[in-house]
Length: 432
Image (cartoon, rainbow, N blue to C red; front, side, top):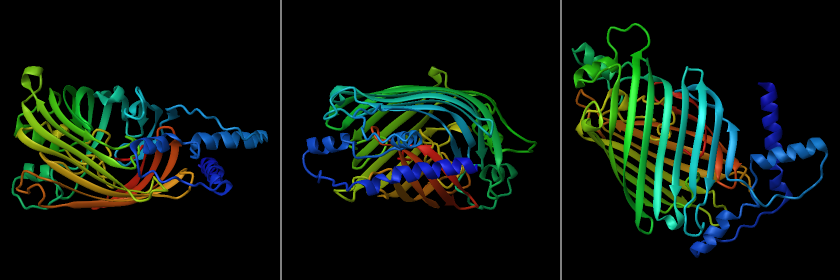
């Protein structure tokens, strides 16, 4: 542990030295789109982890060469060391990348990620995700393949209300004492969406999803569990089921980078329709909304940004299975609700909002910081309505520039919420 801390200290020391070695003068990029794009792609003045490793190597070899490579790969291959309270400590391998398949002046960066991971909670996960934009953004394809032996912490349904009830099963499901259950299951998932560009920044599309969950059970000896109670009330098989269906989508996007945006808007509205004729256990209809807005706070320090994020999922018909209920950390990349474990709050409908202030620390952007706050609300089966009660969370963190070609940051956050929830959250790329 001491050696790792010492290595991190040396790395940060070397990378920080760029701050004092040169005076960075940023040009005002508030003007034409072409000027803005040119500034974004010119990253020779930036400093990332790869530069730091090279500097350490030159120091060890006593190499005084100052030649700088002009070409930087958009692909990062790295050990995937991670931690958050939901999964424990994670070790694995991860490849993330970004590439322009068209002219960067009129084509958004396409991104992908693939990984194979193991965590101390016994979770084994393998996935491949992509978000691809064809030349001139005529088409956008998003999709993922996901296979996992999963272990999820479970705190029941709702937003943590202590509502009196004489029905033991309903009290177990609402779980006002926030008792922790542990669900284990295997999941096989595939989804793909295709969008057509109709107007600048606006896309419409459709897609399909297939989700198979097997070997579901709650660890330990319990008279009642939230999983079993909910499954009985909604006529789901508590041990295995399919959730397959169609998606219809509307998207509007003007943000300048999907990994760490400095400006712009991202909006995605999805109607998910679980369909029995496609093999789903039940018909169910869920409307999902994702809205992100970024305000640049400086024309000379582009990573000085105020960001806003809303993510919601609203039931408009039928019942989802218990493990598919929307809630904390149930977005595509499990980043909502920093301060709480995944699934800590959930309901048939769920609403989440977050504000994050991002500020530079070093001029070469190797180090930056964030402060964030969030709120979430959900309904339950005992009468609590959506937007009736809110639960807050918040925290702060550091950002280490991992790959300047794609604006990939190593994110180190400490966050806290109510009911004693708190923890360290590590990951690549911004939460939103």
